[in-house]
Length: 605
Image 1 (cartoon, rainbow, N blue to C red):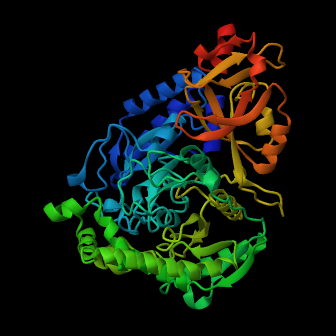
Image 2: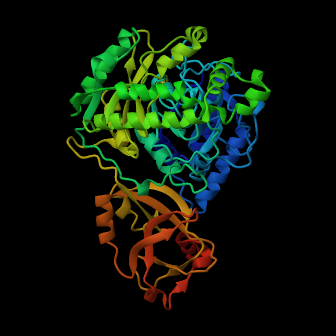
Image 3: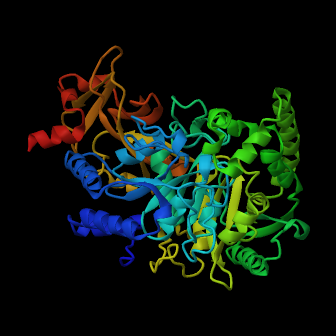
């Protein structure tokens, strides 16, 4: 293979800023690495000419003033997630179709300047935690090809762990975004259900599915989440985070750990020792360890495959099961045939049981702020899984299968290596919408000792989430759209960056807005005014997220005639943003036709 390339986001930004030719060089280096790597990782690899064309478009957009927070960043997409013009197979050639539009999550990343490298292999129809249930081959582990990669997002994890991609998208229904991360020494984010749109994703269990993120470090995962998360009105399961209570964690959280009888490693003493070491490391970081009862969580996990919940997996491959059963992987076919036994009433009974168990689990949550678990109890060789595909897969889901059913979010983070060199990890879990808090907690843990990116020789960067000892981790964030002097590169942008603001996205307002160049403002500022029934081009804005305290101090600096109101964006969502009092635009120059403040300012020079 070619030498390892540091593809972490911070390093790419530094390299790109220093050398305009670097983005193209990185794409070529990555493409060469993909061609040299295990072919089982990819189902579709895009030609270098296509990657270069996408980069040229991103360069042109940036030259026009578009904000591209992921400019030139190469990423991979699990092949049950649509990318326009590339077949989606879900690892089943008989199911294949070619979408004309990308999944919402992919579209948002591409809009942010990221470059799709191709589509990665998976356990067929995202059913499995092993990475071997695919006609495109068993994906080998990044450290030892005799071992499983984990699944179902096998190829996506290996692409990051072997230095083929900066980050990748997977999916997670029962652990598919966490297990492969643990078995390949990378970070795996399972977001809150509905936080990232699943529009354009082939469903495993649509009511439980998440688009997951694999990254070298938690900071990179957070930045990817900032771009691809957000309400999608076209997705019936999308959730607007602003409608829910935001969750925060102190720097000294109560961390739940199962009582000893429930800690199961299936004889893997190395795994048991690594978990004990992880608990001790969290204690040194200030966490209070609390013993909890894992029994209700384990009982919930059993519902996923041993109740009517499994029948939801028939939605996508059900027709093939009836008409072309041989087109399905034998293990998947066995699972789906079992699902046919459930009646409609069984679905309601399973939901009733889940509601009962959720009440019991809620009692455990009163004792803790977050839950710490092994991501997997152990790992296995490929030949062992092929010989006992159901039982060994079940064991891998011992600590993962309940998470989506209980509406939890989780981050899998590396925790060390067994004596044979195989990596294992731990997962921190918490209630929905605690995604960022968990990423920060995971980052503090990851920074506890030197670590490499997957199986590469590249040191992990953990700086994005460094926090002073004893500081409170606050995740309640308010999004604000800026339209003029606070844009990147403009004179007041420091008022955002000095407060720790993070860029969510660059987009436009809805059509009924006019933009004016205000007279006598220092520095020069525009005024944005809503006018009902006006059919304009939409005005360029950047949406930034600040915590509550920072937002308050930021608003305090806004003076007349500007104010903070509510803006409607081009996707129909509403955020806080700069508006202008109507009196100030009398006699001002209307600049709506420019479509944004930057374009107007360029016209002056």
